[in-house]
Image (cartoon, rainbow, N blue to C red; front, side):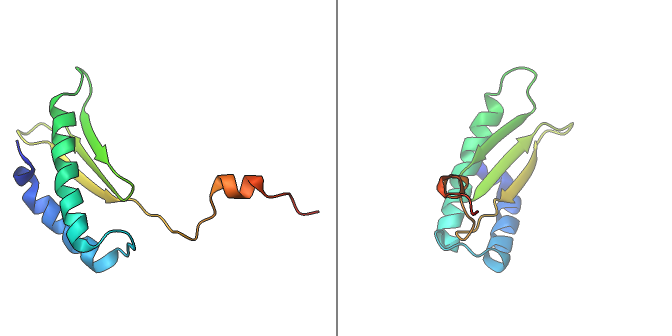
Length: 101
């Protein structure tokens, strides 16, 4: 099993990324490179998982890939884009501010 095994899934994810996702830190070309790298990591995680485990997972700050054991020869593939906004207050920032009276 290689990253090319999931070429259709990656192509569909990149199409969605290019059309719907706004990411200031990752261009579509960088997303494609990251997607392929994460797919390779997910395959390694899936193939080397401990007995009884059903998933191989790889992620970065923006993309999560999960390969899940199925009844067929090929595992199921799920690609998620992690939603994030730079305008969201971080917990540490709000916790360090004094409470308003």
